[in-house]
Image (cartoon, rainbow, N blue to C red):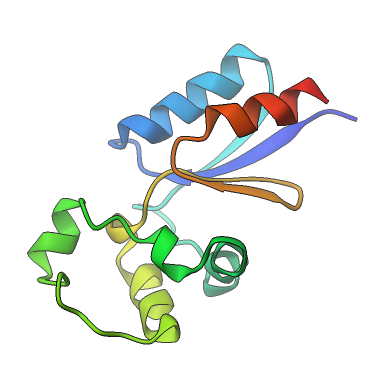
Amino acid sequence: MTLSVQIFGTRKSSDTRKAQRFFAERRIQVHFVDLMERAASLGELRRFAQKFGVRALIDPESRRYREMGLTAAARSDERWLDLLVDEPLLLRMPLVRQGHQLTVGLAEAEWREWTAR
C-alpha cells in the first residue's frame, strides 16, 4: 500500500511548503489543497476539531486574525468553524491528513512516524 497525504494550506505559508517538501523528499504522494482556491469543507474542519479542539485550528499570530480584530472574540466552536470555512487565513497551517491520522501545524516528528511504518 502506498502512503499518500492530503495537505491543506496556502502556497504563501512557509510551514505548508515545508510539509510539501518533507513528503516529496520521501516520495510520498501529496494531494495539496490550496485554501485560497478551495476552502476546506466544514466536515473536514470538524474532523480536525474533534481531535485537537477548535482553538488548536486557529492561528492567533496570523495577520488575518489581527485584521479582523478577533483577539477578544467570544464565539462558540460552531461559529468559529463557520468562520474558518470562510476565512482560511485564520487557520494554523498546514492541516495534514493521512487516512485517519491528522496533524495541525508543522509536525515533522509525527510525519516521520507515519513514514516509518
